[in-house]
Image (tube, rainbow, N blue to C red; front, side, top):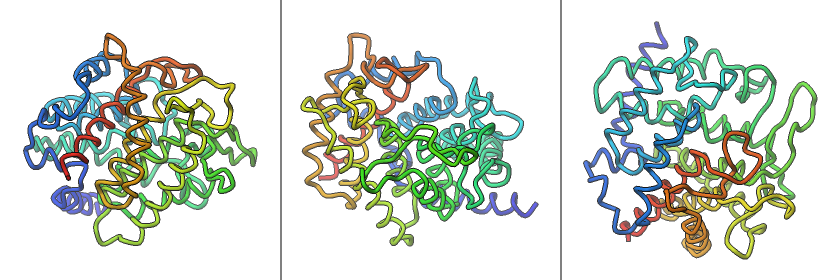
Amino acid sequence: MKRRKFLAQAWPAALAAAPPVFGALRAGRPARARSEKMSPRTEDVKRAMLAMQRDAWEQGTAAQALLEMGETEEVILMAKEAAVRQTPDGRLAVLSCFGGVTDPAANGEAMLFAARKTGDPRLFQAAEKMLSYLLERAPRRADGTLYHVSDKKQVWIDSLYMAPPFLAVAGRPDEAVRQVEGIRRVLWNPEAGLFSQIWDDDRGEFERKDFWGVGNGWAAAGMTRVIRALPETMTGEKKALAGHVREVIDGCLRRQRDDGLFHDVLDRPDTFVETNLAQMLAYSIYRGIAGGWLDPALQKPADRMREAARGKVDAFGLVQGVCGSPEFNSAGTATEGQAFFLLMETAAADLADSR
């Protein structure tokens, strides 16, 4: 009962505070207002994304892209579908990743926005159940860091993107920062300036120590979303997270190819050339520059990565060469590849508009 009372009070206040992720929609800005500064292929990429089969993290990432684009009706529809596929324990949009702990939380921001926009109590309840799961039932380490899956005691870099932004928007900014720092303690390699992918507590060693490119992209973009959602009073936390984002960007850029892209494993040229990390980093840089917490000099490498990614869009609007679904072990297409193209283009246009 106390928890429900807290949520009922905290969420309207959190939403009324207008985190920047809600900015364009709150202001009633037309969804197409940025179109002249975005790729002419943006609508093709969006259409291709919506045609894809989507699991929990894919549904959430797609909804986040639509949210930042200002596509109100599509965000509401995505949220409603995520609620339809909510498991009894509260995890949103579960299609096949039944052991996923943090992936379903990627739907939380869109769910809260849709609830506020429509006033539908079922959407508020769906968001409440997702938050309750993370806070009360999700498996975690002794220090409180969430595990990524329910059947293994593993910390994945993916989780840094999936859960902390929702926690910040849902009125739990301290917990959002706690999760970021907990994941970073386990997976950050200061010598390389990069994140490893998976740590296994039971084995006391890395399940996958590789510096996976998209994993480092999840980290940069996830921390970027948290920074944008934290209250202005958390200046110290924002500064610390901004430093973390800059470190991972610098670590990735040191391994960048001449064509502006990266290898799937950043320090292994024998792995395939991958598109999505460039989009994820460009998105993070544009948002960071616009927010005043990243050096404007980073726009040049961001523009280079954006141009390289734009060249990967095919005649059907599919962003080719990303870490490909469903196995993610070769170049192909994936919902998150589509979503981050849209996030990148929106962030670039917003930065241009801010000047």
